[in-house]
Image (tube, rainbow, N blue to C red; front, side, top):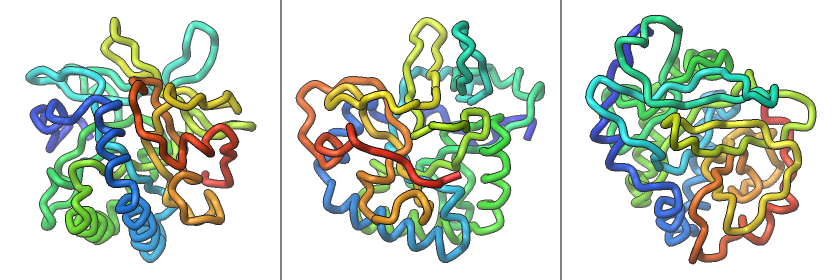
Length: 250
């Protein structure tokens, strides 16, 4: 893909910041548990449960005209691998191969379920996952219909996974930090660092059947964002995330 077809900056800019987005999810936690179980079943039926996750719909940056959000492999000054999602001019898009990676299904039509991505990725794992999922458009249609019925289509979306660039021994998920100066979000592998309640906000949940033996979403979280946590309601994540360990989700 040489141009981010379908990207709508107005849809992206309408998303809440991560703390407010999580507050919306907490208020619908029971429906979220139902949605997670149904989404996992839908993805597994089509054989793509290892390629998809549910996504907390949120934004970190402002996107202007002729700009979009692109995730690219990066290496930090510390030598640590990272995936950096940054505000990118569309005229730079032709320089790299990328595919859609995250969607708000409320912005997608049922006839063209892949037509309104929020963000794109250059990661090899994301490219492979997108190509496999794109063969099964009914997955997005069915998940989108289910989220609409539960009233969660404005709270939850879909993301592809995994991210090959960040995989390695001891990785138990990803942690995202915001770099305001660069207008970028930096995603790094989590190496068993403690997830303190109120500081780490869960933002993505794997639908892979091998991720955890349980169908409870609090045990299938694989990405967290360091963001606003003040005044959050307690959830199963707050009680259990400090002891979270991932399963085989690659």
